[in-house]
Amino acid sequence: MEFRAVLQHLGFAAALAALSGVAVRLMIAFPVLDHPNARSSHVRPTPRGGGVGVVLAFLAGMLVLYQAARFARIADAQFLGVIAAAVAIAAVALWDDVRDLPARLRLAAQVGAALVAVGGGLVVTRLALPWIGPVELGWLGPVLTLVWIVGCTNAVNFMDGLDGLVGGTLLIVSAALAVIAAEQGGWFVYAAALFLAAGFAGFLPFNLHPARIFMGDVGSQFAGFMLAVLAVAAARFDGLQVSFLIVPLLMFGLLFDAAFTLARRALMGERLAEGHRTHLYQMAQRSGLGVRAVAAVHWGFAVLHAGLAVLFLAMEPFFKPLIVLPALAVQLAWLAFVMRRMQRAGLGWR
Image (cartoon, rainbow, N blue to C red; front, side, top):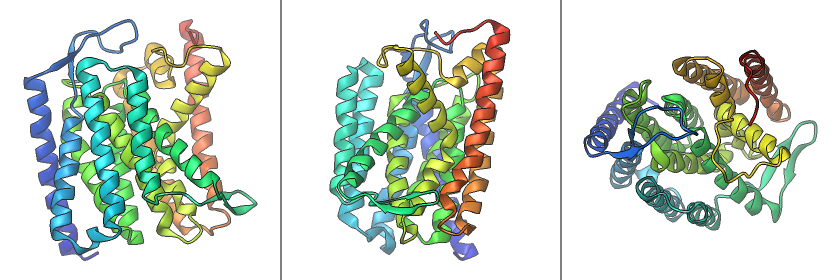
């Protein structure tokens, strides 16, 4: 990409970030308050729904893109359907931020949006396995893609419980994905990731500890869904679809915590639909680690994973799936560190 074009794109992203910031300020001025309870990390009523800024920045960027850029018209119906589905998720999630909807209604919206993406042809058809290589998924492809999209949407939502943690992490993830997609010529992925990054850049200053506003479900579910879809779209960066791993790798810190917590609670016989404060990031904060420190650790994970993603692109296809091993090693070290702090603080998993 030419230097002049880069400057133009960054200037446009800055304008979108400003739009996001204005929307967040309005949500603070006319708040929907999140009152603390026994499961909360905050101690005073705080506005929520700041993710509206992320959604508006993304949609404004897409509107301009589809009006002005030729490459935006690649697979128009497919991606326009996905954007409409993401807007539907955001609308239901915003309603939930205001009214606290039943979990089954939120899940139904997520599944419906995922079906739109899968029905539009965004499906992973191959899965690369270490020492085996790409495996054709057949009928399992749409099923696994559906599970991935819904799972990623909820993972981001579950992890949004500490000031600045998810907002900062997804800013890094989106920016890294935009750079990678530009290098690979994936222009829709590039534009979508750039617009997400701009939205989070406008939101994050208001969400740093002590947060003036929370992202809310409207932001976390929207971003989780879009990044899940972009992971599937990124699979097209290579013929073997190994590039599907790029987005999960970038988000590995969030996904590991969410998956570990879900598996642990299931094994302990806990009701998975009940609220709790036992995510790794929450246990780290409860053990005495500062909110800023826990958020910074996850930002560090995202930076590390961005470096691994660059290394991933240079690797031979046969070895690319092994890139998750160093990322996994780091997360296991984090788990051991948190468990040691829990032991010293006399904390248990319940």
